[in-house]
Image (cartoon, rainbow, N blue to C red; front, side):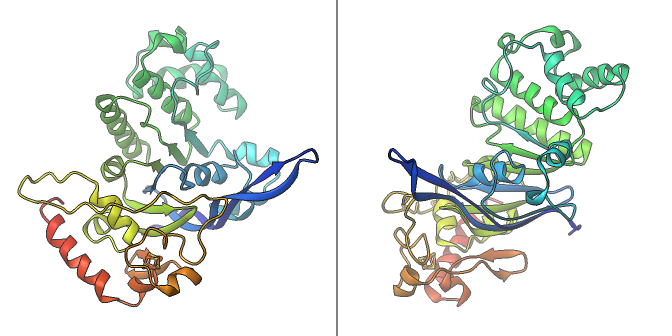
Length: 343
Ligand code: SF4
């Protein structure tokens, strides 16, 4: 694996809950709670989990659209968390974000030309003539035409607007792209076009991507490695092939059991999680998954497991997977038989 472009260490974001006349803080929403991962140059890391698990807050904290409460975000060795605002603003040339909602993320009063010129102007990229040339090339790279440049966002469909959002992110030639639920607001047929476009651009421009999605089939199509988040923490991180072939954490198994199987002869037992996602204002003690885990034992209620390497490159946060407990290993064998036709 090439050296990491980005290394996230203990990233934490707690949002204070304020109330009353004096606006006192009486608690915290623990949106991201000590997350560690690395992203190598040229790779796509997927972050997946239920809505409210902290995946989008993680993405936004990396680029400091949300200020992290604690932790380090090392980008090419520099800790972004410690950078003064002005330096961080300049660093955003190298790290761009593609937002979920293509309707809300484009200024309706500006033409596409003005929208694409803005980042070039802010980051002082090229001369006037070079900027015009860049824009005309980029609009064609994302599959639109030069004549679209003088139209307004409301003249475009959702898929076309997301192409414009991608062009705006790529126009300054960033090294890292954070795609935050970039296709969730689009129809399924348009989703496929945008995913294929992102894949092609990644290859063509040698991009490194963090792809955030609640949809495992989108993650499976797009990513090289996958981090699974639950209640503000990463519970499993592995190479995509390994994660889909041999999920180890009970939460990952449950998520994957909901994916449709391509082979009609294979019947996979769906694992239905009991209960709802606990509130991040008051997460369960010990392992935060213990209230919904069918394998939970007493130790799970009091001691939080740590993310530990179980197989090469596959890290899991579970007491019993670390100890090679039989009931999970047994389940794993059954899983292997069920999914081997699929991959
Ligand atoms: Fe389940 Fe316990 Fe493992 Fe948590 S540590 S996932 S509760 S078995």
